[in-house]
Length: 172
View 1 (spheres, rainbow, N blue to C red):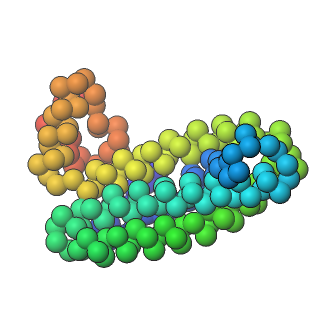
View 2: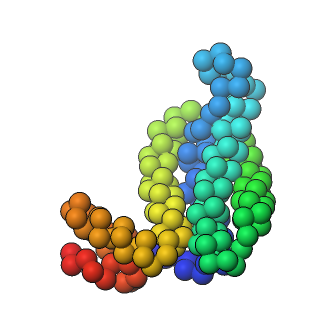
View 3: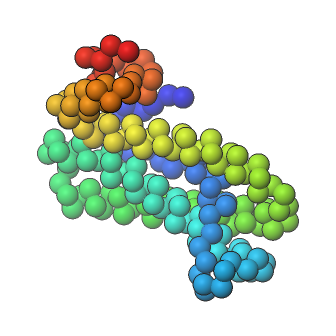
């Protein structure tokens, strides 16, 4: 699994969010999530939209925070970037949520394999969020976090495959 290190490239929500977007559902009318066809379709689509938009907002905000701290981006531009990328990703969420809700209506037994894929996708999404967070830290913050992790008995080294940045003082 490779990692994009370009601080000017905003990562995009991708396949890792799809299984969870298909399973995410927002009970719009507070009736306990009855599985009627149209209601399931609309609630699953809204769940997919929200999942993609929130995940993308987190990725963008964490990645652009480093640019803002260095003065290469002001707060207003950062907020605009978060909003624009989230809205763009929400469009993908509509498509994924709608298609997967129809698939689950026709083949409800696919919910279990989709949940298993959702776990795998969640791990990748968590790593992407961690890397976006890490890239937003300055050198001093990275050193402090690495030392605190080392004192707690946690090695961050495996999060940085072929990347020695931030893990220099820790001997794992």
